[in-house]
Length: 71
Figure 1 (tube, rainbow, N blue to C red):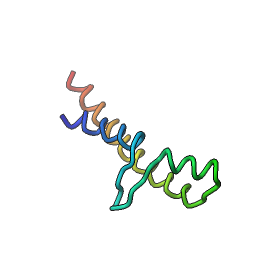
Figure 2 (tube, one colour):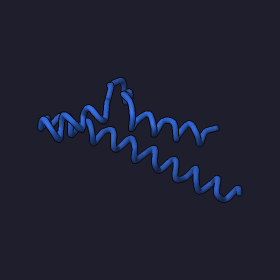
Figure 3 (tube, rainbow, N blue to C red):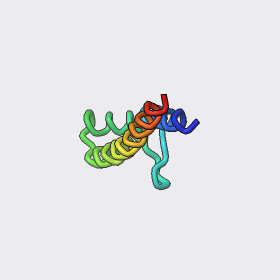
C-alpha cells in the first residue's frame, strides 16, 4: 500500500538517520548541533531534510485527497 509507505518514510525521516543523495542525515543530531552548539553547517543539513519533508508532505496530501474521493 503506497499510502503507508509514504507515512513510514515520513516517520523514518523524523526519527532516525536517513540517506539523501548518498549522504547521511540525522535530524535530531543536527538540531542539537545547530541550536545548542551553533554549528552553521548543521543548519544547512536541517534545511535539506526539511525540504525532503515538504516534498513528502505534498505527496501524502495528494494521497489523502485521492483516497478521500474514493470513499
